[in-house]
Length: 372
Image 1 (cartoon, rainbow, N blue to C red):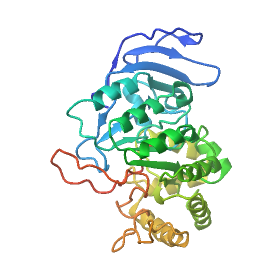
Image 2: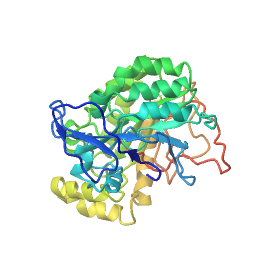
Image 3: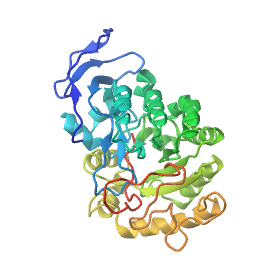
Image 4: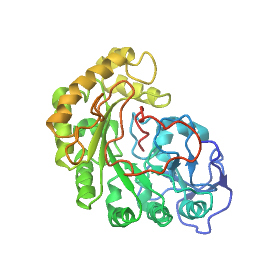
C-alpha cells in the first residue's frame, strides 16, 4: 500500500445520509449510507494516484494494478485481502465487509498518469486486491472511465471479478478489445447454493457467474475461470469438482485454474471462526493441513492435482484453442502443482509488453489472487 494517499479536499455535493468522517481513513471527504445499499458505509476519498506498482520480487505476471475500492461487500469469509483494512485502522472482519473506501476521482487521475511520456503502456491488472465490480460500482460507476482511459491510451489490461455487474460494461469492453489486448477472469469458489450463501453472502450466485462467463464469451471476449479457492472437505470431492468443471466448460470458458484455499493472516482468523461455527468437525483437519502457514500442506496439493487432472481432460479444459495441450512436458497448467498454478487462458491480455526495468521474467503466479 506504500505510496497511496488521498487529498483532504471536500466534495461539492451534499446529500441526505452523509455521516461524520472516520478519522482513521486518511484524506476522507465524507462517509455516506444510502437506502439502496443497507448495511454498507461508503467512505469517499480523492486519490492522488491510480496506478500501483507491484513489488519487484512479486511472482505476478504484471507490474501495475488499479484498485478503485478498498474493502468489499462480497463478504467472502476466505478473502485474503482482508488484512489490507488494518492499514486504515479498521478490522479485517466486519469492517472489511461493510466499510468500503471509494476513490471517487480515480478515472481523472488515471488519465493524467497514462498521458505521461514515461508511461510504457504495460499491462495493468484490476481485481487483484478487491473486486472492481462489487456493489459500490453500481453507485459510483468508476469502471467505464477506467476502461476508457486504459483503452484510449493503448494500455493492455485485465479484470478479475465475481461481480455480474461487469455485464453492464460488455459493449465498452468489446470496443476496448479492438484497440488493446484485454483479459477477463471470473472467480467461482463453490457450486452449492447453501454453502455459497454461508461463505460469500454478498457475491452473485454460482449460476449467475456461470451465465456471466457465457455472456462474456458470447460478446467475443476471452474469459478464464479461477476455480478458487477449493476448500478441503467442503468443495474438493471428485463429484463436486467434476460437476463444477463441467459447468465451467459448458459456459464456454477459455481456460480454468484450480487453486486450493490459502489462509493468510487476516483471512485465517476470520475463516477459522467461520469453520469452528459451521463445520467444527473439520477444524482438526484444517489445523493439520495449514500447520506450516498460509499454503495447504504439499501432500494435499499433490492429491488435489491428481484428482483434478483427469477432470480437466474429460471436459476439454486442459487444452487451448486449436487443441494444443497446455503445459505439455511438465505439470499441466490449470492444476495446483507445487507452486506452478497458472492464470487460466483468457484471463490475461494475449500479449504483454516486457517490463522496462531489469529483472528476471516472473514465473507463473503461485498464489490465489485477492478476490474482492
